[in-house]
Structures are given as structure tokens and as C-alpha cells.
Length: 231
Ligand code: SF4
Image 1: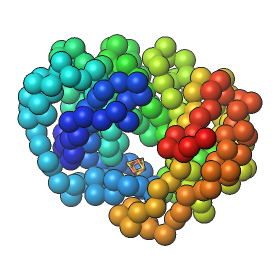
Image 2: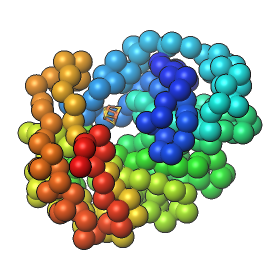
Image 3: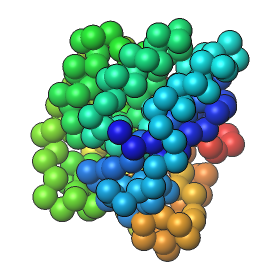
């Protein structure tokens, strides 16, 4: 396991909870707008060990309610289950961020009762998934499998899409809505421009455009919200 970042406190990463965030290295996607580009490959630099992170969490356990495990793609880390078990021993909740491309790992963690919240990325419509995930030959059946599982597993969850001008259209959000039909919660978060993403040059949408995307998805999903955008 390569821990490539550790944020001791966040009010943003785990909805409704004071949390810490652990960033694990490696990813099986190459989203061109990825803000964590330095975490994606074997070259990613380890920042601390699991024991070091757990020591800090132990000392701060009375201040924290949970831990968000993100990446990279956490399900690629072989010791993920061990990490989660040790976090839970501290009495902390665990939220897992995932791109949904390893449904078996998420299923196993859920069957062991190890997850308290799942946030799954929906990169785009099935038609444009490979382009937006940076994996041209992507198998969207695997994403569908994860969507079905997350929707019915009984663990609180959200689906979410980072909306990027140049990559997403209204048609994509219509298709995403149909794909997620019956889901409880879906967030659209606007892309924030940065020179440090995998392929700089993209931009975000205007507030009105994001509201229009939300309206497109709303008939299909229980709750649709914008994240990081003032209403
Ligand atoms: S799924 Fe995409 S955005 Fe997330 S870490 Fe991997 S490359 Fe970056």
C-alpha cells in the first residue's frame, strides 16, 4: 500500500462528518481532468506509512468522526481491507471513494460490513465513458455492475460526476440519469481549472449550465444537487 497523501482534518470530504482523508496511490483510469495526476502510477511518491497514519488517527480519534479513503483508486491497494479494519478499530467511520471499476472489491468490503459510505464516480454517459475516463476500451458493463450493487447494497452512498466543459454535454447527463434510474443521491461538481491536471486546458461550466444538467437528471434520481456551486 502506498499512502501518497494524508489530510488530518476535512469538513468537505465526508458529508456531514469531521474526517481525515487518506490518498492512496495508483489508478486504473486516466481522466484528463484528474487533479491527483501525481498519484496515478507506480512512480507515485509515498508520503507516510500505514502505521504513521494510524498513529495520528489514534491521537485524533476523539476529534474525528470518520476517515475518507480516496486516491488514486483505493480498490487497487492490496492492503485496503487491513487499513479499513484498523481504522474501524479506532471507532471511526469509513467512507470509500471509488471509480467503480473493481466491483468485486467493493462487494467484499460491504459483505464484511466495513464501509459506512460509498462515493462512486460516474465519469460520463456509457457512450463517452472511455473518452472521459481516459481508457478507450473500457468495459462499461463493469460500471453498470457497480452502479447496481451500490444502489442496492444498503450502505449510504452517492454517485457524482465532475462536469467538464469540452467533455460533457446535455445528452451525457440525460444518459447518466437513465443509467442511475432509482438512485437516491447524485451530485454534479463543477470542474475547477488547474495547470496541474493530467491534460490542462479544460474549463468548468457556468452555474446556469450546471443547473440545467441537474434538471435533466432530476426525473430519474431521488436527490440531485450541485456541489461547490452557490444556488
Ligand atoms: S478515477 Fe480519474 S479522477 Fe479519479 S484518481 Fe483516477 S484518473 Fe484521477
